[in-house]
Image 1 (cartoon, rainbow, N blue to C red):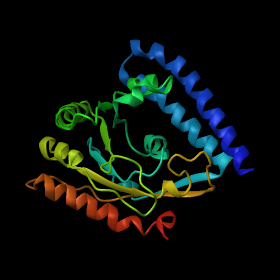
Image 2: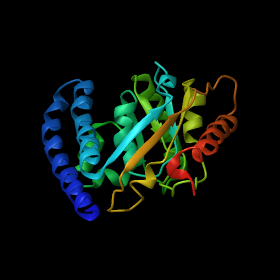
Image 3: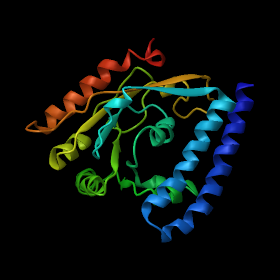
Image 4: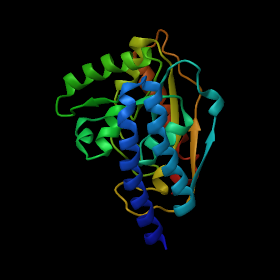
Length: 238
């Protein structure tokens, strides 16, 4: 049944992406807020099917810590689930992602319409300049910015090295950092076809204000909170 449920979810994920993409293309003629609401329905549908087909639900702790002002969300990265779940938890957002993802058929079109910050990891200096410049633009547009400082998905309970891009944007823009930790990888593992039933826990910390702090300090403070709270979540325990 685990294989069957996971397969049915995959079918729903792909077919719904095609439908939403076709519906969303005409919204290019409308304000971006309209486009965001339409595309967000794909995330909503996927979370619904995950719950009813695969038995994956989620709960949020610390939702009251989300600022009213656009902020830099810095989170650990374990699964594809974050890009779905965060759309339902946080206000309108943009993501940092690899430019190559925009070339994925259908999915790439949807990603591009959400105004992500697409970078080429092979050009580190140019990518960092693009990230900071475009990140500040997104914040000024009133969008939250989601950064996964580990850069790639990591196994549950085993964080990767934190890169300073998110802290750099916060430092130069004055926007607060919202530290987030979760255990989604225990239920939707990296590169796994199978989805395991259970409840994902998302924990949101108090905002970290950049005032007067060096980029290194900001990054270390966010990393300390995220890594320090990993073991508190059920899916990250040995």
